Image 1 (cartoon, rainbow, N blue to C red):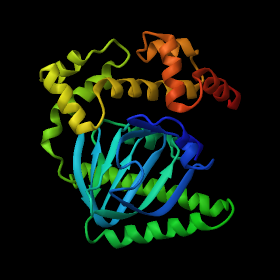
Image 2 (cartoon, rainbow, N blue to C red):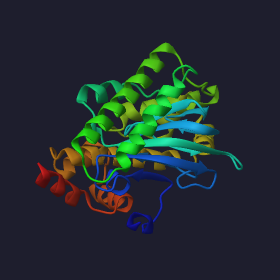
Image 3 (cartoon, one colour):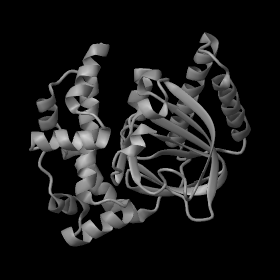
Amino acid sequence: MEKQKRKKTACEILSAADFLNGREYKIEDCYSEHASSYNDRLHFHDFYELSVIYEGTSRFLVNGSLFAMGKGSLQLIRPSDYHWQQTAPGEHIRYYNVTFSPDFIPEELRYELEQGQEPLCAVVGSGEWPELVRLLQRLCEAFSREGEETADRIFIRGGIEMLCAFLLKRQESGGRPQVQIGQEPIRRALAYVGKNYRERITLADAARAAGLSPTYFSALFHRNMGISFSRYLTEYRLREAKRYLLSGELPVKQVAAVCGFASYSYFVTAFKECFGETPGRLLGESRRKK
């Protein structure tokens, strides 16, 4: 893939253009193990990824929460989530993987999914599991058929909405995997970044939000996240900048300022390194599509 020829950063921001192949959705029966792609680093992406595990066990780090998931569980990674699958050596998972663009689902559903930073994950009850698996199998069959049949597209859209609604309902009922409590200082720091990334943020600011000394916070953040705090902050801002540019509503310099970049030249350089194109080009493409 052309994208993989570029310099890798510690935290990848993956594009729907690379992973959906020009489509609005993709449904696959997948296998992942310790050595699988993207298991070794934190990453974001600008599409939704819903996974339903039917074999094996793996740990997941999502927005500072670390938890294990195995057979009979599902989770949804949102464009607002950073995550890292941490499958241990010798472990693996088999799962149905449903990826789709934000525009493929209704706005009201997107709104519900984007509330809060808590991971969207759930354990499925034994009575519900067979029906859920049958739905995923039928979605895979519909996706595998050639062409863009209207009936298949409608069925797939409805199936994805049902899966999202099921997950939201399970969240409300408390059917979630157990989260490791050691991540609480990290979650506090990341919540601080999410609320204040437009302003000047220092390591000391984040450490204060986490309730730790700067030195200890820096080491804890890197040990748990696999990335330095400064790099995380930069790539969080870059991801937000890309969302602004895709809307086509603000000029590039204003996007840079709104997203907390004090230096415009640094913003352009960092954006190109991360996404492989300049922010000006992305903005132009977004406006031409409108």
